[in-house]
Length: 241
Length: 349
Image 1 (tube, rainbow over the protein chains, first blue to last red):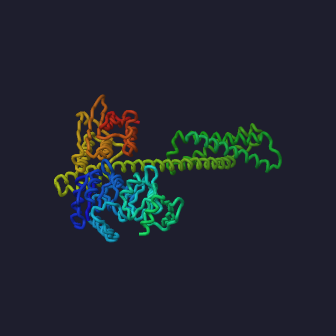
Image 2: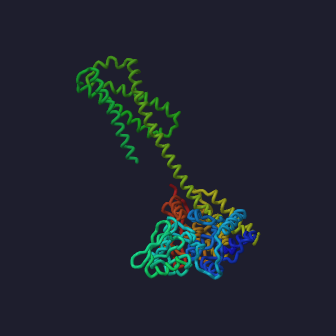
Image 3: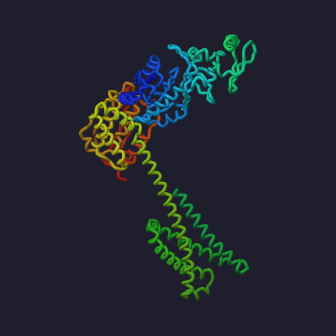
């Protein structure tokens, strides 16, 4: 699998490259010295995995992730950052403490491979850059952050300049416009219900007719979303195959 | 605090001896079954006043002779002797009071040895109890004070340790050195020595002492050279040291802490890196140390003033009083200036 190393220190990158030589399953396709370089490389090389330093000049590793549309698997590398690691205890794939120990890296690599195996295999055409259910996004709200698989997000709701992201019991906000997001999402998986809402079709539980020729969609978990009249016909088409 | 203790003393003193007089009066009434005479009441009150005065004088004496500092084995015989003397004194002074308040019969028995010994011993017991209470109170108080002081010192030491042994720096340095082992073995050996120098200094660090300026400068150079391994071309350093700086002694690791701050909050935040410039000047027997780092303070102040800076200001104050100064400002759009000025001599207080 293709990996990108992001670290502002050349020696740190070099050391990780060297350690990764023992793991042929991981192919390092590039190195970035800061967040901006990294964003460009992620978009160009489309890596499956990021080794990401948290403390970097300019933008931090977190800020980098927030700017990515779709986030690859991420392994954090840090010398000492109790605070930041705490935020990730739950949802990070893994993290490595520098200096990185070879055995510890092996564990991480097996974790990555395990994760790859269990991933649902959905055929995805090359160059198909739309975000599907297998993609994950990075969401940060104050001091908490999550890697969320799009399959777990049932609803996006626009709220001023922000989007409220509904998953589990969380509703963090991301700074994006709903229109921009809509263009990136795979239309087979997500549906623009109205000016304010995008719903995840796999979470739809029930549909009722509503006023003015609209529809009321009930999602698993109890949220109800109105589908505008304009979109209702399209929605019916999609749901009836 | 002091006023509270004083007030407590007077309240206890008045209430205890007031109660003593009151109890005597009540018992006298109960024993005789009739109202007590004015003279008898005056006698009891005067007697209580005697105790009051005796204990008060005793307290003054204890304070003057610093008996509170004595250890228990030395204290007990002294207190016993003093209680005995006070008992005797009160016995003697009680005789004229008895006469004035109309108990003329006393004079016949007053000088019998049995009477003297018996009553003095009772009085002595009162004084001894009083002293026991007094000293116990002070011992407990001193014990609490020393506990508090100890806790305070420990917390300071902990803070120092935290600010000195910056784990982020140490682990990053070790990581760079690890990579350097393959790339440049010679340089990696040198880096290991520099790191051990810094660690040793952090561990033997003493708050109160001063260190030679040159020793401190060496640590600063070791530190910067290690950071250069990590930051490579992103960190440039520049020294401009006044030759007379060598005559000064400086608080250990103070300059290093400030330089480290400059790297941590300045250089490491800049993608293109920057410069750390250390300059000293000597004027009027005062050493001025200026550290400039690329970067900017946010709104003129570092967002959360770290333990390092707070400690530096506190240490300067403890060591030099008002004789030293500290400031940290945006010198221009590119540089942050951190400056300390220290005198050659310590304030001796």
